[in-house]
Image (cartoon, rainbow, N blue to C red):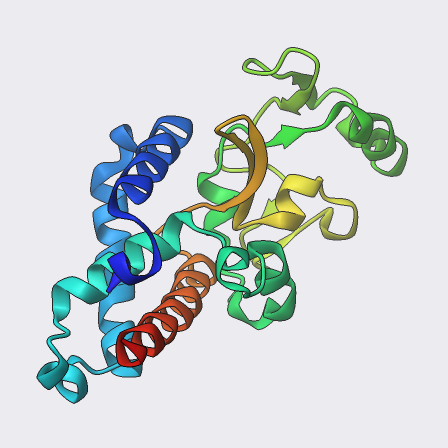
Length: 213
């Protein structure tokens, strides 16, 4: 089904580029867990049994999920990752995984002054970013010291950095262009729900094309 939506070679090159950018090679186990988490949810929404006579199988669903992980629905006249995330804030169940496991917490150079002005206690907590020298990061961020474990909330929620506001999206340079990509963390309901929604969209689009032929 994926091949009905995108050329196989183009998909493989795109996935390879995404893997290189996100260092997925180091996270193959997590990516595999992520796909295994999405798959049963997709099977409930789009049962293989219903379409078995048309030749659709479990492998097709896995391929659709892989496409949903890396491709923007804008390519298929659907919403962007950012639009999808903005429409469904309820997907975040405030588990705190992003606060506990994310590192480094990127702070744009234009954010630093505003953050310190609104939160004076941050002045000694923000240091130069090791990967992007012109930007910054929190000195301690795994777990983030501003995460309240008892309340399960961010202590500086209303002034938190943009990278925290955008999660589970990450602004990354993919093939020379800045794109909002999904952080494929299998234990993040927001990320799983986003890829599931995209997978449903792509499944229906592929089905539409399949029956048109």
